[in-house]
Amino acid sequence: MARLVAPSMLSADFLHLEKDVEMVNACADIFHLDIMDGTFVPNISFGFPVVEAIARKATKPMDVHLMIVHPEKYIPRFADAGASYISFHLEAAEADGSDPAEILRMIRSRGVKAGLVINPDIPVPKLFPYLEETDFILLMSVFAGFGGQKFIEETYGRIAELKAEIDRRGLRIPIEIDGGVSATNADRLAAAGAEILVAGSAVFKASDPAEMVRRIRGDA
Ligand code: DX5
Ligand code: ZN
Image (cartoon, rainbow, N blue to C red):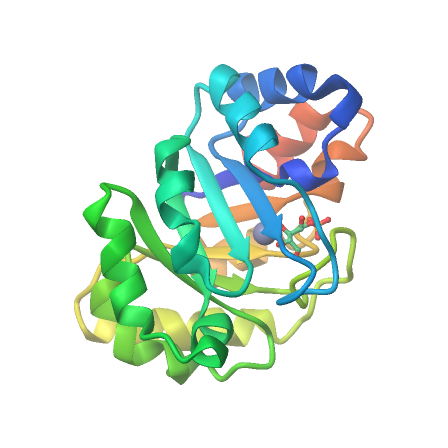
């Protein structure tokens, strides 16, 4: 299956961000932007100034992955900053007592693709009530919060489980995978049904990031 590569800018070189943005523009498909609040996850990443700076140079779509409580508060601002995709965690919405379907509709109403994310310990069927309202699903293959963690092998089975339900309903919802993705597991992830592969450390710690993007994409 054809797949898109979304480098996670969390692993970029923030002293030379322009260089890494240009690499993504030239070689990759999507900018993956991890927003962490230190509450939903025990880490803080970056916020609007960095996203807006990337937006000024980005020629590829921006995919904003919200790891924050009350995602609905900040969705308008990320949409205004130019996000093409915005996802939030089902666990965050549930803990806030919000209706995930309403947040998905809010994202769509701004002309942005709406995504729902779950951590590796959340059963895949918990996504099923919302499939009709989502434009993509992000399955975490590590626990959200940090780059550079080890890929969780159970992910392959979770992709297959989700893909089977999407196909059964006749829907067209790309599955995105995030965490520990590398050239080693990319083929198998795509074979299981993943269409968007996020990769942070594998890309930015490579001696040739552009070449690593091509390997993860499965280009010859
Ligand atoms: C983790 C983030 C990921 C992370 C991926 O919470 O959502 O996007 O940056 O980094 P790697 O590819 O290094 O696991
Ligand atoms: Zn992410």
